[in-house]
Image 1 (cartoon, rainbow, N blue to C red):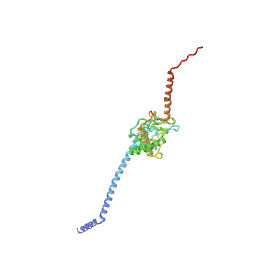
Image 2: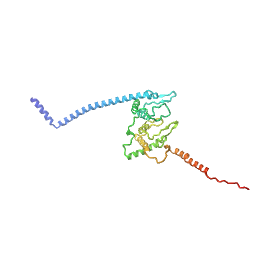
Image 3: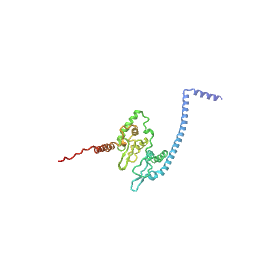
Image 4: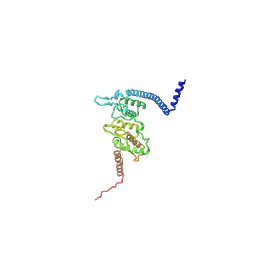
Amino acid sequence: MRFLNRSAGRLSRHRRGRLAGAVVLLLGLVAAGSLYSLVSTGATSSASASSTSSNDELVSEGRKLFLVSCSSCHGTNGEGIETLNGDQYGPSLAGVGAAAVDFQVGTGRMPMAQPGQQAEAKPAAFTQDEIDALGAYIASLAPGPAVPDESDYSIADLTEEEQQEAIVRGGQIFLTNCTACHNFEGSGGAMPRGGHAPQIRGVEAKYIYEALLTGPQQMPSFSDGNLTPEEKRDVIAYLDSLDTNTGYGGFGMGGFGPVAEGLFAWVVGIGSMVGFAVWIAAHSTRSKRKKATA
């Protein structure tokens, strides 16, 4: 009993020492940190495993859709199919990324009823969930551009002054790189070999961004090395401004530029004046002269 009292007295003296509080605090922090690390590691591992399982299910669902709707042109593994003369019946999809799938399928260009010169936009044949599954499967074949987030192509978080600056920059980029095919106001135009550049006025911003990333059909791709994400966003801001600004030029005739306007002026304008002049001449009073008799 005396030994226990003596030991308790020594412990009591140590607790009153200068370093006792610091030692106790350090032990408490180490214990709490170790416990938190064990709990958080377990939770992260569980979330990671759940995410992996969910992505695998999405890829599996996408492959089922692909085999039914796309494999007849692009091959059972997305490797593409060549014709007997060496042309591509359907190109390889390895490396095109989920962005290309979201654009082509989301705008209804794919699946095509039959291979042709150019895929036309039409109502989508798949729901957005099915498009996401197809994109996940194609993305699993090889690395490629991902579907952009809304923050990538929206200027809503900028101030009004910054938005105007973005629109001006986007207009300069568009006039330099895009007007040769899409017209100065995005109304589209003719292309070689029977193709055409589609109208991009009123197109959803996400699809314009994806088209810039992936370069569908005859369009070149503008990677982040060619146009930065901010420059792509500015181009989209410029196109959006064309839809909201008032056209003060009167009848725009589709916005196809001075050739169409000049043709209209010559055929309709001058043609109408010539026709009116002929009508006046035909209905004016004519003088009649009699021959003088000898």
